[in-house]
Amino acid sequence: MSISTAPLFNWLDHRAAGVLLHPTSFPGPYGIGTLDGHATRFLEFLSRAGFTYWQTCPLGATGYGNSPYQSFSAFAGNPYLIDLDPLVAAGLLESGELARLAALDSARVDFGAIWTHKWPVLFAAAERFQRNPVALPYGDFQEFCASHCDWLDSYAYFLALKDHFAGRPWWEWPAEQRDFEKAAKSPLRRKLSARIFAHQFLQYLFFGQWRRLRANADTLGIRIIGDVPIFVAQDSADVWANPDLFLLDPVDRRPTFVAGVPPDYFSADGQLWGNPLYDWPVHRQTGYAWWLRRLAATFDLCDVVRIDHFRGFESYWAVPAGSPNARRGSWEPGPGLDFFRAVRAAFPEAKIIAEDLGVLTPEVAALRDATGLPGMAISQFAFGGDARNLYLPHNHVPNCVLYPGTHDNDTTRGWYGSVDELTRDHVRRYFRISGTEIQWDFIRAAYASPCRLAVVPLQDLLNLDSAARFNTPGVPDGNWEWRYNSAQIENLEHRSAAYLLELGELYGRLPEQEPAV
Image 1 (cartoon, rainbow, N blue to C red):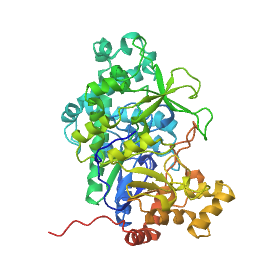
Image 2: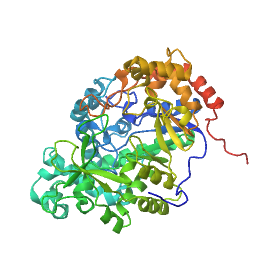
Image 3: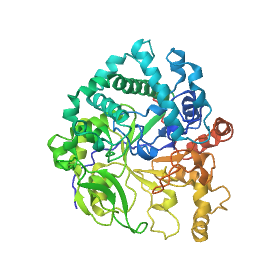
């Protein structure tokens, strides 16, 4: 495949460093990280240590499995992240109502307990606000609803219906509610008006608190990298309200094909993700309007967007619905460069990272190079082979984002302790190290790399083992739960910030200084 065109994007033009951390991992008293003072303290640490970027996982409301990559909406924020203390100060909650949340484990997120205890508190605040709309520091509620109506109305109604039907997926609802157009005219909508209002109000809180946090980040010189999964969850407001945009059966509106990846060296069965696939010709006919709205919503929250599974824009693995695994399927063409031309026209200054990990074909590499988007490299993938491994530092290219590991990898300390001795020996000989401080060895290598952006998971800065791993792909339980504590960030502030600042200076990764006027 040959694509002869000047790159569409060329934004990663200076060296910088960042930290990967999802906000559910912040410390705090109510069982899960929120957008409170601990978030601000984390940003202050980034600034003191010479970082430019904070990277998160997707910020959406999570569904089955609590994965931020399986959200009820590609547009909405996660209500679990709402800081409750401002609602107490505003008289919408009483401190005693938070007692059960305050009693939860502070070391890991117990999503079952959060679901049981936080939703009633959030709904109580929404009910009181509906009765008495007190002034809150997040702008006018009605203006917020009007400015986000293109997704907020269907999302709030979708969740109200899920609540009404005991959490069942939308394709198990009665026929009238399965059809979005019919559901919009159903008398049930009026009956559920209070719950619809509640979900709208919770989005108002999330967006208001996030914007205040982002303003703090901007003041400190920190830029936020968001995350957009290429696919959306089947049980989402996106699919329910926009069935024509997906490959669904016209009668029962169930997927005809689902997403995954074929068998490879790591998995004989491939990976069956199960997400519905896009009807790309329909998207093309609309000028990719839904995707452009999605990206606009994300850029409203973040400075940079990482798009997960970039290769799916060149071609994607379509697995017949109902298949037990991903062995049987076919490669189907994605929208290719035409999609990114539309993105470039809508967002000329867009800053996007292409998640291009895995086995890439020449066609996928050509598409990435034609877009000009930086790809990704993982240090943990570099060792155990020969000098041709593209993830080894001597093979890095500047237009790339380097990670010791991502949210899907073990911590560096955990990885090093679990690999075979030949791989550990390769690491030690390559870096000329003893391996006794392997996390700092990988961090220094990331700073020294030609890759213009180096992003380090907070777990590696804290030198944590596999118990702090955030996600293990293919394992259904125990993911997304890790949290750090205030003592750990204090230790970083006092013992590591100056060293990280020195690394930034040595390797040219300190934030760019504004020119003097």
